[in-house]
Length: 585
Image (cartoon, one colour):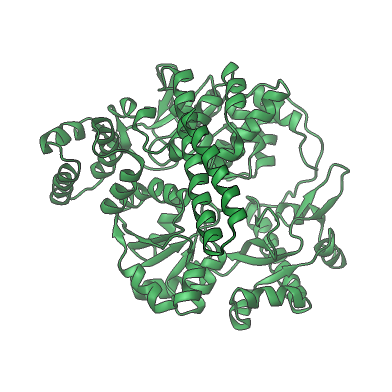
């Protein structure tokens, strides 16, 4: 059965992350923290930090981060319950009894592949019997042949539809639990993980089904549900569609990377075959290494929203580490690959991909929207983020040319950039970085201000209450940040202690949240006046929110005026003027 949260918290309290990680890598004291070469990627200069006070780890080189459970899961390839059980045993804490298979991994893996194949057949049969699901696929432009090739299916609207299917085949429930197909309830029973969703099997390059993704047919939330980490499936080590597209990628000598199942299926069906999709997480070094087996050139095609843009920038450097050329194709606002191809066709999509920007131009353009390129602080902040990237480039001639271009774009002396470049150690340890992260460098608020608010709130204390009185959740645009801020506010209302490590444990299925927390904790350590920084950032966020509302009202006023709806015009103008007054307060 599921491990109760109070037991998880008890195990975490009785476990020291420094002691656990030191069994795997040699930690050395570095101020209040500990430092070591990262165990998750190759590096010469240590960039892997472990915080004893926060009980979390973070690598500034590859971006890995989390708590003691996350570390054990990644290093030992364990599921979350297995990591808890391992640490509980070391801490002398008795866990509720739950059955476990005793087979060797190879035997277990074979069993899991088999049940996943059977589950895919069940979902396919259910799809064939569901007019509603078939109509949904048709409405999204997915043809029958494509659905059959990818073994697309449908999970019925029942709590035990799949359970009943496997019961007839005498498949034990504990094996289904290990496969992530069912979930344990509080009464010792189980229920289907996937219900009333179109299912997309996730396969490895050998066509063995590792897990599933599921999407609702309507606008209900959550829109997507994916298999959890299992002994055979890790979303950070696999890519959707690679089993089908690998030969096309080899032939084209480059791969397109998109974000979702439909953004893979619709382009592939339209003839864009050298394509793969990530699995609900930012690209990892393992995925890049997997992709490198088939090509050394990648074009990233992400949604043109702030979250997608931020994910793209965060991931660029891992391609340099693996000597993979990367380009970024920019979609028009309001379009994803699925929608763009359905409206404009595959040939226009191919033209857009061909016009993709290289790493340098794209990253500099994005940073230009975050910081004021005309101010000294903005120039320094942009240089702080560009120089570690340029430092990774192995070709001296190319590096020199890009330094010259950066100096021209920032209108600064080239020699000053070379001086700063010398401060950049391998693996992004840039000594000038701490001075660059200040609220005044953030242009129009944006995600940087929201992340800084999260970083300060993770420190706990009285500032949480002050933020609650000032900041409304609907003013926070980044959904990942908003969810974490809400969790912190909720804990504060119940007088519970806000702990980054505990938040990570309670969000173990959300890798993006885990990485965001570990990143935010490190940001907090370099903010000197936290109260001032908090209210400066909240002011930016509010200003941005009001501007967005004003833009929306302007569009509504224009529409109402064109429709000669004077009552609506007057009402909207009053609302617009009230917002203007609020902005000036």
